[in-house]
Length: 400
Image 1 (cartoon, rainbow, N blue to C red):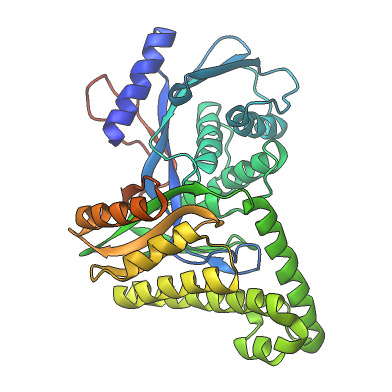
Image 2: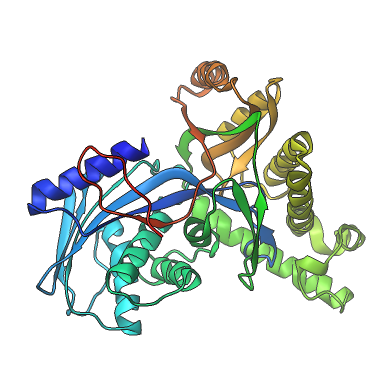
């Protein structure tokens, strides 16, 4: 699938611009093994890049004009690089303009670009196609114009683009995972300091399977903002009683339980989830190092229980998918992944069971909700990278 994506993107570029691209880049989507809703609560996350990509075919030109072709959308946008770049009414364009606006401020460049991009990252499934787009554009421009930016700087530029041009106040995890991904490794990321460590994640006789609910409920944004407010209020109460607490990171479950009455039911449940989820991330790292995938599966299922009952960001469709999967002997663990109220569940399953599992759960899901289920078999992959421009119909060669 990756070879076909590269081939089709390059071919489309050649047909439109009557020349080969100067370079080919791949920017991946991401998953998060465990650590939901703790990125903004001073916690740790455990993401990884996956083998679903946006492919960019890119060339500089001799003018100041930039032409961006979104192959999958059958859409395009052209603009003058020397103009004052501002958001427009096309969201996919804003992700790109936001990146270029920042790059120009760091180190001005005047020659324009021609870009064709195409993707195998499912849209709206919570796999961070927007972060892949932002980071792919930043990485390609950095290489093409020799701007000398680090991977960390590229990730931050992607995040800031989403804040300023797309109006989404996202954390850093998605962009960081897309840029820093390493094959067969997860990233233990401190979202506050951006310190990170790689941990081997060779699943051997197990695999990761995503089940896409094909729903996204409209209260995602309001629900997200409410949760942030509730945990912030809860942390203030905890700090008042325990001055040694500086964040949820050094808060204990016993403290939360002792303050249950003062926190009130809602804030208690939110804080209870956050403290336990931070600990689950640390335990998940140990289980990966030990190759104890049965324990990892149980941790994932515990996370879903917390997301559904304490943090209350799941929904009927996702709860059904997780519950149904957990009844299967071939499934070690399952949980909601992402912001919530729809999107995908992530499932740790025995290799070879995927097709039977997909068929069974798809039929049950269709019967229960009359919604078609989508499923994605994924592998942990390398982060954003450049490929040497291949000759047509030949295998792409990876460059450093």
